[in-house]
Image (cartoon, rainbow, N blue to C red):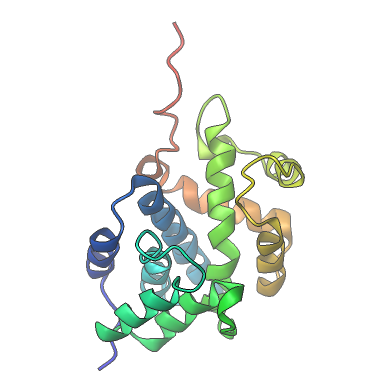
Length: 196
């Protein structure tokens, strides 16, 4: 029997496997972007949201390309999670060979690396606020190979192309989605140094 987990059930799975704060915050950022894209694309925000929340749940335990996201997909299958969710999660890595043949799968791929990059961009701003990150600045930082070097710029560009949206519009859209959950992400300015 295949099921769509509730948000609470998805969070439970995430926190069972993911203990690190940074990876949990990344999951929350991707969830927010996915929910927002679902509304824009006529998808189900709850389904897209839990897909975003779960996309990297296995990464802390199984970080290699041989294991992630394959092991996670197996775990989700054992727990009866719907194939559409598992397939989208498998498609968020090019190394899996799983086609991104749904809007939900294309959106997950498109927002994943970008959420990480936007987080890095926000954290180097004096205010530490995601809302203060200009699109122009993000595009400029994408050209700086030394900045957030683990983020794959080609994935960000390809993701926007696969979704059929202009890169600047995509960056703005995801930044605005993340702004809605800025407090949970620690990107609301509360981490900024207090001026004397």
